[in-house]
Length: 186
Image (tube, rainbow, N blue to C red):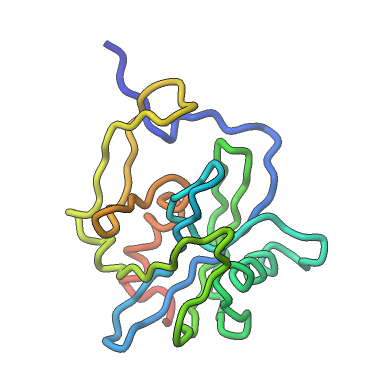
């Protein structure tokens, strides 16, 4: 019997379109690092999934950093002045045809989150220690519509209902130990 393929075995298209996301973090009142993510609305190829605020560049964006900041403002009303960019992270190419440029940013958390209801169902604050807990890092076999067969999918369990997987997983997974070790002053 053939070995089960991983989700990372999907082919990546040759012609990728640029996109950018903001990876927002902050320290809560207890000093714990929190990661901010959105849960997408149910429509579209990424419907219902956890993601970072972001999207495709507009002609008015000076660069992909500007794209990430603009998209974060549009999606979750996070003003660019409330974001201190800490690092440009490695790009992530995905089977849907995008090259995602993530930017790590320490944010000033708003008093109350607001979001664009057309694209976002909710804003989640996820403790980094939760993601670092081995009990919340799992792998299962999934077969989603449009996939050529079952795949092994690593993910983080967020709450009782949400898997953090795919490109968002690939962005945050190598960052968790670095953030918890204090690599960036947050």
